[in-house]
Length: 239
Length: 312
Image 1: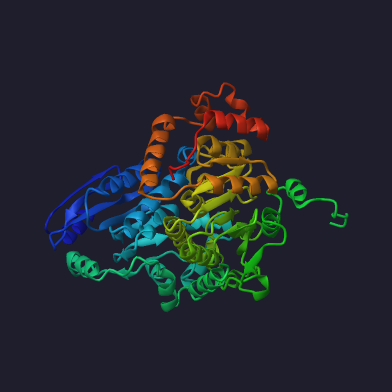
Image 2 (image 1 turned 60 degrees about the horizontal axis):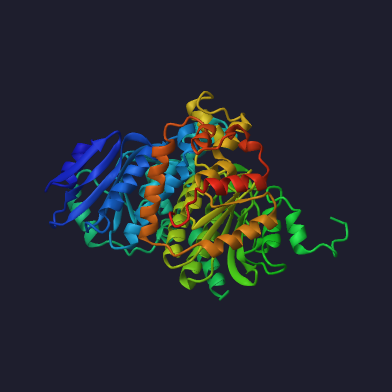
């Protein structure tokens, strides 16, 4: 599946390798420019070992290359293990997100492409740390799997599955995340991905985070933008 | 409290108040200069979560977070304090948006630091999508504020710890202070056990939880630069100390962080337990670390000398 995506995204060629679930490389854009490519494949859990390679790939490129950055995501959640937590997984995931945010706000616009699964901390450190998150049909993001949710909320699996059908604010799925403003757009598999990528690059939104306004516009998050704006206005008066 | 307090100075009261046990409001009241806290969108405005009623769960009028401004040794600071006793301090739509708005203002002003008193299990699962996205927005807002010159200090010592996306936001802060009970992690013990089995992580083994995720281990790793004793005055002093230490943010910090974290993997990547890491650090009696009193532990941590200063 990933090979098909690359073929459709980068008909002019790419040098992207996949190693132990980590995607690293770069590709030629239709315009002739280059794009840095990284990501998580094969529903791999994002742990300390994967995260440090991804952040290193972006840092190596800053100052050496120019052009936008693509983050492909088909991951599990963060790797849930004693070793990863012992070594400070929160720092590794935060570091990856910080590197992506820094690149985006310093001339290297970032695009996330959610083409499979993702969840929780893995999604925060990758797709949700990009300026524009694009979904491909069939992508299956979830903040948390239902068994873990059942454990934490102390609700039965049956009750959760029932509520999941009717509640976009909590239920897994691409369309729910789109309604929240997290996923900016969903591309079509029927058209060339290269065309859709070029169209997006030609019309990138500003770097300013507008996901709360998007969520309000789409009816998924009616309060976030207003509350943030009210607090901002009050805080600005503190000067 | 009915006992007369007029002879007790604010500092004495803060010194005798457990940060872990105190409410978010008490923490702020005692952390800041007396009487200086001004809250934005306080509980009287009843901005509750619009989502909890779907689950027949009680709402709280401040949605579990206090945001506002106050003074620390006379200087203006923005503050946010999560209430770990409401829904485990979890991030929901309203809760998260309050912190996002505060950080956006801090970025525009550029000179007023932000103190975040974390106390959170992570995303509030009843509004998981909104909560997850709120955390993503906060992470971006923290980094944009830091890029504009704002110091963002995290204080971690509450009963819900700093888990899930809270751990990622903490990783974005300019500097952290942590107390022994202030756990920092992504996956909580129960979540690891549910997904991977009790052999991977026994969530009922409290000693294992503390030494893997607790404040002492995070201080020894250098993830937190200051270790605070569990009282509000110690956190106040830690915040003042960190505000004095933090320098400007830039690409060099991220490059240094890459080196710092890669070095940690090289040094400790094969360690199976926190005790093995502490032994590898040259601590002779590493088994005794969890029992060390704060002053002795601080001396030990300073001797080991791991820090994330200028490298985060």
